[in-house]
Length: 242
Image (cartoon, rainbow, N blue to C red; front, side, top):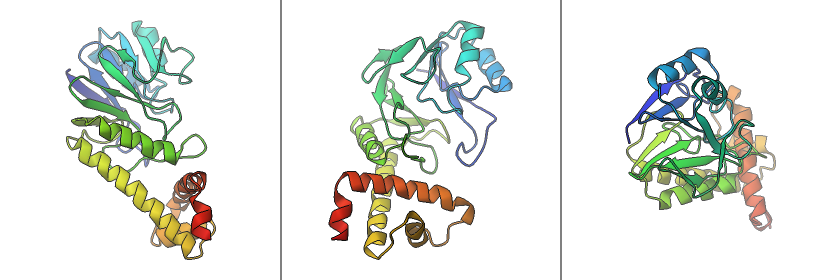
């Protein structure tokens, strides 16, 4: 498959340089991005024969441009359940649409999916980024599901990762390993903070991120809550406090 990308003009702390909309051959786009007119115009110019719009999940920097693109081009929208009312094809794990295999990867959101090409290229949406790590925001985000999704992606042995934010990665398996190791390391730090007497996410954050920019305290505490939910669901909180 011939894969290119257009980056939407929506840079920010969570979107990095912006949302990457992938152009697949001459017929499909993946994660059309926000409904920014200049971005939509760029997609239409590059894809005059567009027939399929793939979406990984419902967040506002990924899905909204699908509807105006559908109206302008007649392309069908392919997405997991709950993303858009205008979806034409609702995908489930294991479906194959236009040679892209759907891989359910809940965790960042409960409906998130990735798409795998026959060549081993993996479109990861927000499950794996090209730089940095993904935010897990409970209750929609779930750390246990997220780690299991990472492990599942690793088992697929992808060759390249095309993330929604950040550069393409040719070190796919190594990057997934880094992601898993990072989450498990952070989980152990949470357990160690509890063992040292921390009881609130704020107290744990002060121990785990002692030099963190105060503007990021809230985001760090949400990530810690995500780990705490996983630990408690696994029955390990009681064990570590006893």
